[in-house]
Length: 166
Image (cartoon, rainbow, N blue to C red; front, side):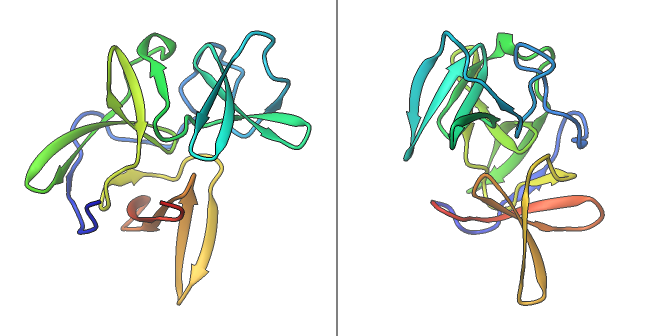
């Protein structure tokens, strides 16, 4: 895994904080508790089982199911997004790579859709997505979004500085 800071250049539209792009239904939002859909596929990523249906991932919390971000490794067909996702170009090991971004999730293009990936160290986003945790360590505030650690870097810009459980 590359741990040195990546040189980052954002191409394409500026990333702004907004609600997640709607998967299938515009009334589904990350962090919302809902019953699991009647027809679903069980998928396992890492140590967790998810329910997947129509571009939406659910994760069990007690007796409920919560709409969650796609986990690293998950695939979402492009047809489930109303508009193409904004791009971020990041220089890693001397080469620029294109990533796609939606509300805290970095994706790579894969087989007519998006596959969720860990963002490279040094990637920057504008604004924090919904549902993050914050920690104050040694005089600095860190923000954790699904095990990706960010630190504020300028005005309303946040930079990937590490990973919590990888």
